[in-house]
Length: 363
Image 1 (tube, rainbow, N blue to C red):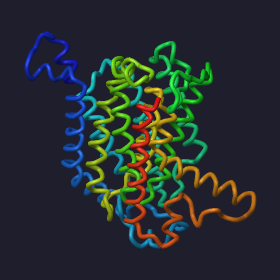
Image 2 (tube, helix red, strand yellow):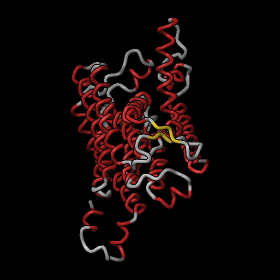
Image 3 (cartoon, helix red, strand yellow):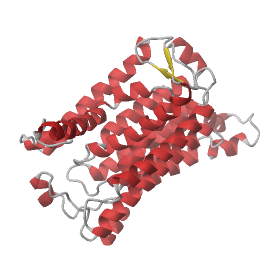
Image 4 (tube, rainbow, N blue to C red):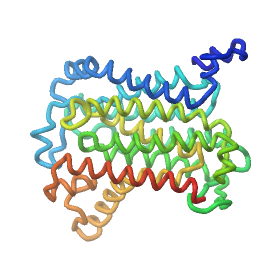
């Protein structure tokens, strides 16, 4: 918004006003703005959630036994705090004439709405069922399909239906009319992947922040023809503005971590996990780095695969591959303490983030 207000007036402004034309300046401001909003609203927001949710988030009885004792009474829907900070900072510092920004923001909001409905039903019914799986996936698929078509229309014609590969240059896989389906699977898949990962205090938000950091850089580079040509990336004009959104996500995520660090004062709930995963998926589709997201978000991929493998193998043989799925519960059952699991998953996420950055030069 500030960028548009400055641009609407004389563009010959010098000094301080000229800074608003720099993505790096606005991205840094968006990060700090989101962080300040999260920290400022955190305590009163959590206090209000506690007043509304007197018994806190319902805890699955089939989960690890200690969760029932240690996490009972903790409020959920903390994802609303993330979204308030994220959207406020993005609307303040991003170029609001940019279609990519609106496509990603509305996709994030749509997934957040599905997650909110799920959290609300769990709280009102005092169980862990929420929205039916069929309804939930139907809404997610619809939102991500619309997002895929929208993002496809914003992409240059030569890249519009293509999938790029991270370790080889000049290789594009044409999907034709099937590309929106691919985008739909990517966005919905990562929305639910982050949801699977959100099972321990602080476990999901740090990998999200790391992925957002990597994609802030990718968005900036892909949106700049000079840098994209130098690094042999496929340029997508306009995606540079998503660096502001990613920076706001980093700030909002770090602010939320302040309250979500063990022992958590609030859970992000499906409101947060679905929206953040959907946001990452949409950004990856916009920047043509869907497969790189699978590397950077490898923790989310592993958590999802552990659930798929567990269900598939149990239905075929009646036996379990893991002591419990998702994967972080397997390590809990093995006797690992929660902080050890969380920190080691963070370390893996950092390594995977560095691997994702390495693909930018290896192309």
